[in-house]
Amino acid sequence: MEYIWLIAGFVLLIKGADFFVEGSSSIAKLLRVPTIIIGLTIVAFGTSAPELAVSLSASVAENNDIAVGNVIGSNIFNLLVVIGACSIVAPVAVDKKVLYGDYLFGIFVTVMMLALFMADRTLSRLDGCILLAVFGYFLFQMIRNTLASRALGGVLDGEDIKAQNPVKSVIFIGGGLTAIVYGGDLVVDNATIIAASFGLSQTLIGLTVVAFGTSLPELVTSVVASKKGEDSLALGNVIGSNLFNILLVLAASAFISPMKVDVLSIFDALFLILSSCFVWYLGKTKMAVTRREGLCMLGLYAVYTVYIIVR
Image (cartoon, rainbow, N blue to C red; front, side, top):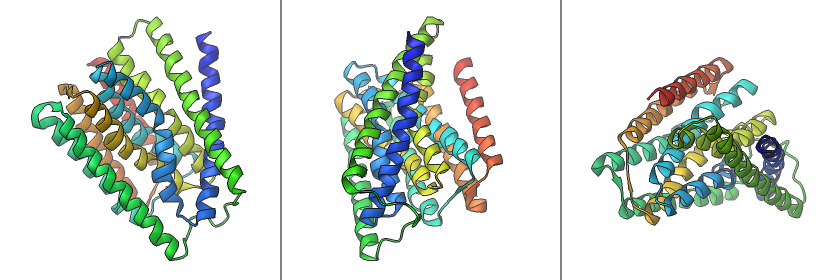
């Protein structure tokens, strides 16, 4: 029965992502907001909902390893697998402003997270407040950029996007988001049951199955967006989701229950930073991530997964 529910979860994820991308793109067109901003905010928050639910539940239950591992594992997956998969579907064009702005800000936030980890091997409520303050700054900048864009006439990446009826667009976003979140829950819950039946440890399940499952919305949404030619939406989703995971999900988890940070989590955070710099370099060379580079990123993630299993 778990296998049937697993398949049902994948179906909900795929169709939900399709509706969610269409609705979000339409809203961007109607409001004359650049697609990258929609990707960094609405889409990113929506696809990060599974991470938020899993990490907060883990924090309430004081399973802090799951909360930390879920965030770091999901961010690594988003970076290497989601962008890598999108580039295989079609080379992902990288906007210079995004590369030197939002993406570098994402690296800065990841470095700040590592610094908080290494300071005293704990993530306190004060640390959570610091991250939440940075999250507030991020939202402020997004609102300011949106207003500035609208004042200039709202130049969009995809002028060929069809603007649907506003009510229909909201229904698409709401229905798609519901399907994404519910589908993600089905996949995580049933994949965990299946993995446990094969004798895998809870720690390994948390670092792999849960991180993979909660990142499926980002993967499906970004691939669908890339397939539709919405590179800004796909890239913005990844950058925004990673920022949301650290600045909101991890911060809220720490605020609920201060957590000890395992040494292995510090190494994982360092790997995330190195991977972020590697992908930034790939994007910088040709202002795009090619299919060959995407395959390289998927290979790097495969090596990381083997490392997790072996350790």
